[in-house]
Image (cartoon, rainbow, N blue to C red; front, top):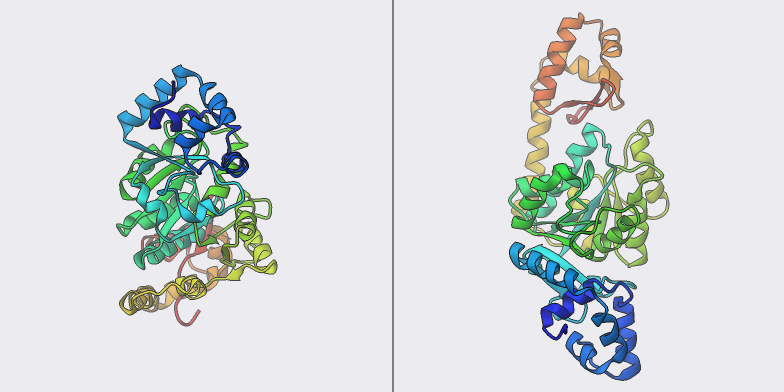
Length: 368
């Protein structure tokens, strides 16, 4: 029983006591090569644990992975992501939907709050789009908010992105991201260490976070509160020897305070994609860097082309959130005019509407 190589991997996925550390310890103590088949054949402990896996679970798992085209990477195989293998507690087995070779590509993790500001969401999309254009694979956790914006920004540019789950591959969470997960699998990979049928339990997510940071050469936090789980991921990244980056924000924005705390603790302050590339010593083609500059110049040019009243309205908004009524008061314009101009500015991507009816500025010109 469990002599088939695939059965051995599936049994490993159902044997939480056989961690990567445990497998390595058995090999070190017995002189057995770090090879799952050899462990099964020559280690009584490994064989006993693997045989204890429920045959019904193994049969069900096998049916699922064969039907869905799932790849299995155990920590003993050559295809296992090398950076992840170096962390103190790598997963013993990864379930991968998509191309497993993408897990070996240079990756940047992007994480943040589930309730971002419009500016934070746009920033995540823009950074993910730009950084993926130079060859970095963007890795995140499929959550709503910054995670989803990072995945979407990468997909919009036709680049690779990886989603790491806190559940089994058949239990996509959140459910509204099932379609997004399918798109990610086609363009990159969806990954989990949890066997099929595993629900998105709360204690799974810290384990997921160590994989997100462990796969990557660096981690960028876009927006995060002081008690955000993203700060846990950032701490794990630091412990794993990864570069940690954070984008600062307004002191009035509670979703910027986590980033500010990270910067005070030594994270690299980031204002544009080139800052990340420079710190990682990741070489980008000059043409792509020029495209970054052109994108920003075009956005600023659009704002500079607005007539005087629009500029007055943007100046009244500044870079803090403000309600419609406050903007009417600050500008002295009729409410109908302010409503019309705000709609135009939203369509231009210059302002965004937050929950609670607060407007925020998303773009700035060279003059403000």
